[in-house]
Image (cartoon, rainbow, N blue to C red; front, side):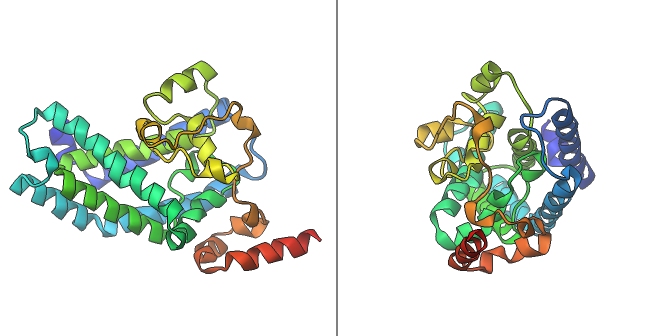
Length: 277
């Protein structure tokens, strides 16, 4: 495994991303959690555009990740190098820390810092959550996430192959926990004690803010339980997805979504109120 992820070709990484998405897309058609309203393919098209921009940003800044991981390995720099660890334990701890700092923490920060939320909310405007929602991030938000990942690599001390393994696992888990698939309640509840299950993450996409500001994790659910941001909803079918001020159909268009961070939220609310009167 070390050799495979140390030298993994870009085409293999793309295959993992696309393969996981196609697999979950097919499963969604067989056992959907909720019935999709509107054109499923048009919805996927908009989300796949943002998946493409995320891929472009990640590829363009890959040199930062490579240099950071090579530096930590070459100099044994980082907290995980303070004590000599067996490979398996270094790998487990690295995955946990990359998930905590590179995903949970930056995700939580984007919900707390106003100007960062303006970019992150593109992810929350989606009113029908499925596997294609997973990488629906504004290009600027993708930059935030790369920086957070580099910080995690440098502070913890994570070799390159572990980063590649983490990114592959993280991409698939994000697709899985966003997927519109119906799992038996007992299975979903059991999974949510270890990893982020579909029903657990659906809560995060609720329009109700106390639920929106909860369940930030991507791979390991323990972070939300540990930091008391875990919220459980008895019936996720009752959740209304999206953000109240962005329900208009025009917010399904790529061009409009790209400009959302620079719109005035107050102006949007006034527009929505005038339309309802």
